[in-house]
Length: 331
Image 1 (cartoon, helix red, strand yellow):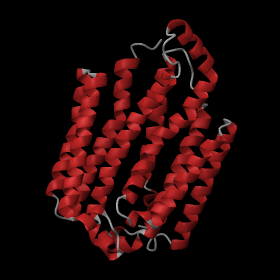
Image 2 (image 1 turned 90 degrees about the vertical axis):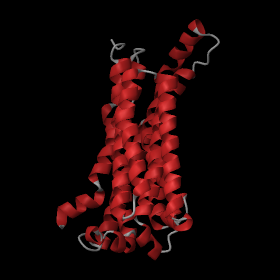
Image 3 (image 1 turned 180 degrees about the vertical axis):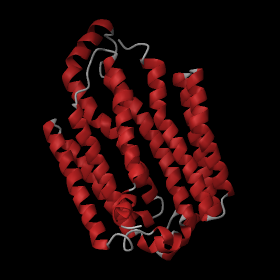
Image 4 (image 1 turned 135 degrees about the vertical axis):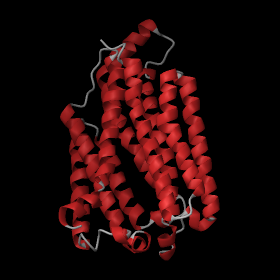
């Protein structure tokens, strides 16, 4: 493997596609129906949204490259047949790719923030790019800190759509919404209309945070042999493999209970429950089983793959919810 195939693999295109898909689903299947049902329109143009997605993808791609750059020592132990940087892609080329992607990604975010007159939002992209660098260079070796950083940055992907779109909606329709509430619901805070949008997106962000936190710990269990070589203080190294399995198992059970409880409390639809059980809870249960029985690295990889299926199932729930609840109400 060399040339273009190696470079593409270094970028992890499937992960980048999931980022773009997540943002598109948040925009078109979560926010858009919430505003369209009241006759409103999203404020970011299609091109502006495309710039936001591309900016996020480029910053994530830069993070993938720099992560592999700093992971060469551990990869020689954990997966020697899959090393890219230093074997198929030169180290200086990888560093140049990282810098170019970051400059483009952050630059596009700055231009977009300027165009929509919300300069402060550019800080988010600077923060993400810087966090990915420091994570790869240092924090991924620290106890829990690296896991939390990756989980938070993953949760930031759906949140970013709301951070750009909802303030613009408030700017455009705030007076109209306030007038409506003053007439129809005088005791209700008109901001609740916009807060509900954030609540919906925050739920998906919370789901992404928790499952990615579990996934990161599973990856640490898979890579424990190589991580010991570089003095990493991951959960399985510090607390032991048995305790790491118990931690991930407990987190999986807590996540599953919260998902089902939320569905029953706020959605309570038989078709939605069936979808959640099959597309989210079942792969989580399989991840739990394989994680608990895992002995070799490949076993933890299988467990992580089932968790990826659960994440995708949770993401595609947006489509299920859209067709069941919004399509019948939309004009």
